[in-house]
Amino acid sequence: MAEPVKKEPLLKCENVSEVFGGLKAVSDFNLYINPGELVGLIGPNGAGKTTAFNLFTGVYQPTTGTITFAGESLLGLKPYQITQKGIARTFQNIRLFSELSVLDNVKIAFHSHVKYGLLESVLRLGRYFSEEERVEEESYRLLKIFHLEGHANEQAKNLPYGAQRRLEIARALATKPKLLLLDEPAAGMNPQETKELMDMIEWIRKEFGLTILLIEHDMALVMGICERIYVLEYGSTIAEGTPAEIKEDPEVIRAYLGGE
Image (cartoon, rainbow, N blue to C red; front, side):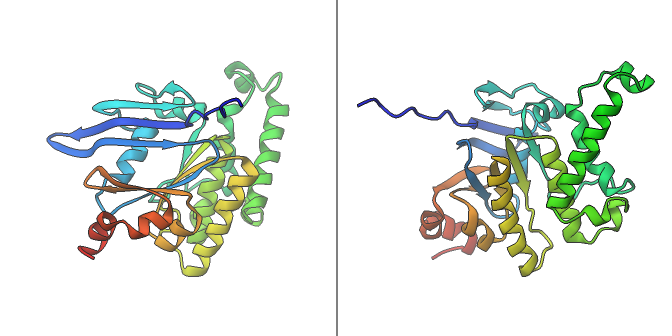
């Protein structure tokens, strides 16, 4: 009987360290995510979680170690190049184009994939109009999925907080990612909004065929939807496993509660 084909991880991070001055923000960090997985990255404040996201997206370059995506190295790439390869992210502090309309926030993200050139754009020739029409249609489709179509022409800054969170996820999806990095998407949400967010994350994962890596402080959300979880403390991985294993891990209990 033939051996089953082993899947290559979509994202692989090996022996990565990040040093700022004399401070090690991330130390000998290892992580892998298989295609289609929903993985959590948790840890106390200052554990290095957002630093890890910044390494995956080219905001920082690792001091040591390797990061590969779909078998290709991400080292040395700029954030926009990593976005074009298929990694999108949201931020702990919402970063929308607040003065622009809700629709334009999504349309801007789609423009990383338009099929017209600079000259066609400036002179409005060739494929410009057909591509712009396609971008607008796809943007409205995303807004409808996130129940934002009624706010399309409003300025993004005027949306309620939960709607701004949904818009940020919609904008990330407009870049057509394979891997979606969500940095504390439930921050500032009430329990009902958090439950709706959980359902949405699971739905978009299936609907868009996404792999998702999630940073989150809301343990109910993490334990409820993640298949595997990594736990960071002071930049180092102290545990990795299923939600059931993480709940019982003595190192995790110590890190969060200070003891058993």
